Amino acid sequence: MISLQKGQGVNLSKDNPQLNRILIGLGWDARTTNGKDFDLDASAFLIGENGKVYQQPGIVGYMDGCESGGNGSVTYGGDNQTGEGEGDDETIEVLLDKVPSGINKIVIAVTIYDAISRRQNFGCIENSFVRVVNQDNDNVICKYDLQDEFDIETAMIMGELYRVGTEWKFRAVGQGFENGLLGLCNAFGVAAHA
Image (spheres, one colour):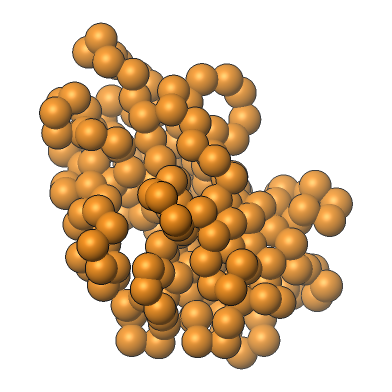
């Protein structure tokens, strides 16, 4: 397994030329609590060459009707509303050979549900990670542990899966946003889903 630092990337296809079925696992723990559960949600934005979503809705996640996208190539594994337990709290599965050619990048994000009214942000979260697993043999290819402090951010881009020619690569991003899912939807051109 390759342990990534912020900004680092790995060529997923180089050492795994037959790689097709991958699982992107995300996890976190609440560092502090204000009496309300932390409900974090994973989502994937399917991005075209222009930096915006390839087709509407362009997002895969817990929202109604958005559990799968990219002609079924990207699937959300389900909503964990508490983050309790070991291992991955939420997952996204990708079938690389099914991703439409117009999708150049899949941005993996985590947002805090109802963060403003619950007065929660990523400063209250610890042990956040994203990992990429080869589902054919259950080998963890790479993992990124979020290290930075984020005291006002309510959304986080954890990483991005992107295509270069016929190869797929993954980059650790760790970029926070203050305006949650709505801010990410606006940035990537998602229509009326936040």
